[in-house]
Amino acid sequence: MNDSINDHTTMDRRSFLKGALATGAAASAAVVGAGVLTGCAAEPNQTTGDSRTADSGKAFSRYSFETAPEPIAEADINETVDADVVVVGAGFSGLCCALSAAENGLNVVLVERGSRVIGRGGSIYAMNSKLTKEKGYECSVEEIAQRYKRMMGYHSYRVDGTKWMLHYKRSGEAMDWLIDRMTTASEVGGSDLTPVMEHWYEDPENINGEFSGTHEFLDGPNGKGPDDNPQQDVCDNMALYCEKAGVDIRYETDAQQLVKEGDAVVAVVGKTGNGYVRFNGSKGVVIATGDFGQDKEMLEKFIPWAAHQTEFGGIWNGTGHKMAYWAGAAIDKNETPTPMIFCFQWRSITRQVRAFQGLMVNAEGKRYDNEDNVISHGGLALMHEKGHHSFAIWDDDYANEPQWQNHRYVDGPKVFDTPDDVRAYWETVINGPGTINMNGSGDIEVKMIKADTIEELVDQLELPKEQTLKTIESYNGYCETGVDEEFGKRAELLLPIKNGPFYGIKCTPWFLTTTGGIRCNDQMQVLNEENEAIEGLYCLGSTVGDMYCNCYSTHFPGHNLGATCLTFGYLTGRYLAGKETA
Image (cartoon, one colour):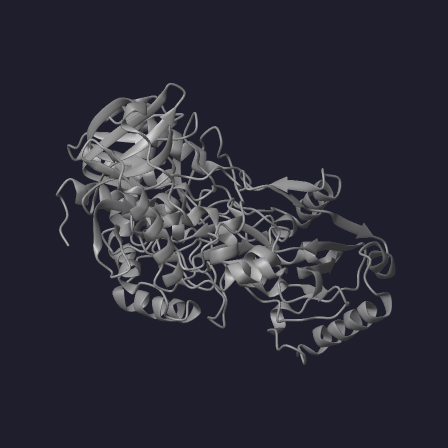
């Protein structure tokens, strides 16, 4: 790492805020009507380096995004649109908020930079929905207290417990609202979808197991099964519901600047093919613009450890974050927005988003951890190893292991019906293109190796033969005795590597996206450095700060979609309409 990067990453939060506010104040002299413009999104992946001034006595910024741009001139604005609420971003969170607000009587404009809505993934976590109750998984407050106590520990208690409890108390209601619409979407010209509950990984030691409550919506054109993208169908349906409810959806409109009157945010200016449009929101402007994983400067500043040690992913460039910061927003109280880091090569072994719990060795051919983990924590463990990768190794008998044939859905079919189905699936990966695309965040290398002998496999994986064979021999010994003398992995996961053919795959941590970055309260009001609400400004989805810390854990699969997108989006629409109180 060079000196300039070291200098960047040591800049503290107060320096950033002082620099941003100073440059914002300089820009405040220009006004549009009665409002002050205070923000502009940088172009994707723009990295202009150190932008400090020559005079060391003046405030300076170290990254381009820390400097507010000149405000857009009033003369350049070709159209003004008045609404009660302006939602910026037509992803899942923005759609939920827009529809909820419109259904409660508000005039809503939804601004989207793309030509259509985009949905990614499909796992949506909610507790005590009518589906979970139907399946027998209702959760009491005592049970959730036990779960959350464990999760608060994983996040070092540097998260907002009030937001977590808000999700617990209201996610069932929000999910029922969504289910009612998704199952009857043909009424608005969409696809009727089938709600299902995903199965979860159970850990008898109650350490790394997942919790029940993850919902998916299947049977649409994009979501036939576990390898598809059912969230696209959900978002397509939501857009149709929004249109029916009277939401004015403005596609191909790139939000660029927030407008303030005094201390309050009152509007946002977007750029279209025909010039600039000002959207006034008398009750509020909602930032729902996704992550900042495509802005390398923001990664360098806020999450440098993840930026340097993982395969690069990310989806969006932090447009909403930048606009909010220039309007006076503070970053998360824990000061570190949180990455989602997974190892998706494991999905190519079990066809499930879960960690591989067989033998893992590093580039030196040695074991480095207890392999019994969830996919998020297992992915982080890879980052400690040389080259930030490791290797999964298994044999033909793994196809007989019932855990690999686990149910994907509650009361649904198994992922694999027979061991031969498992082997056939491995063959499709071996003969495949060598990459998989993770819903728009990039192509991940997936090169599964098959060999007749373990020596052949080790050679093809380019591992040090003597040490790797020694490791496998020791591991097989633990499997025979049922006691893992190195890491204490539980006996039922000690499956030997003896019967060919043998398989292996290189495993890398993948930076999927970021979560957090904008400080807010449990009504999604954006907060400044003094924890005071900035009037008229709200945030949702992957911008919501202090929900996660250290890493995004998969113990609640789909928690971000279920909490910051669905539940908080649904509730924020109601807050803005006066249907909810603090």
